[in-house]
Length: 323
Ligand code: AKB
Image (cartoon, rainbow, N blue to C red; front, side):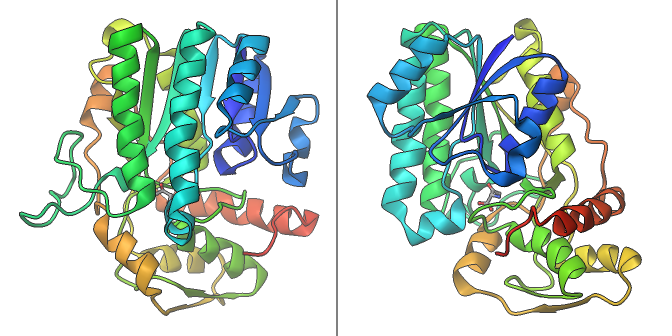
């Protein structure tokens, strides 16, 4: 199948491209930035420069390549988005609109939208239910979250109005051996990277911070399974998906099982801690389980056992840059 990715140079693209290529798909990877050195494994994959905020360029790319399936990954994440809300609006809001319009005009069959737990925030009436279900009033506290809510609604609109088979997941914080960019959940990955590299990490979150997290192989599998799910079985446009929800100090304990000398300290950054505190502590993903059989394979310790050797290898290869 011919598949186009936006934001292919990011954390999800790194692993998703490899999975798509190994399944024999023809992949067109697009990103504003040139192919990062860490994407060397995707050497044979077509890499095209694309700024999703440029409507004409997006239209041209989609019409030229006529993909059957698009994964829309391009986004400015929560912490970076609070530094530059205008940029987050342009990329996440206008970019998503441009991608949907290009899908409509180029007659793309299916679009996979990557939403996030950042769509949630505490409602005025009190805290979010724990676990948080798919359908609660959405009160995001960040520009990133607000634009993801809008993206979800636009997907449902384009589905109903123009028949584009648009589907998506709300990702927890994703952890992998590829560097994330500007997320509030990044403390979790840095515990692994700096745990290996320096034997110590000063987290920007409190020790009792608890948010939903997921290991990237599960995240990639969720995207692929949803992309191939029978439309007749889908009762929603956007699905919560969950894996595990550890406190920051529980992640530290898990890392220390493998790296006993690693030291972790906690110095909360007020902006990122505020964002983390506004997100759900855990997620109810029963609709995804029921409709398309979603089930994570990795819990926290299984992720740690797999990830520490990977991070070690990536650091040896110089493929993880500093944060
Ligand atoms: C972020 O921290 O902004 C992202 C997310 C949870 O969507 N990783």
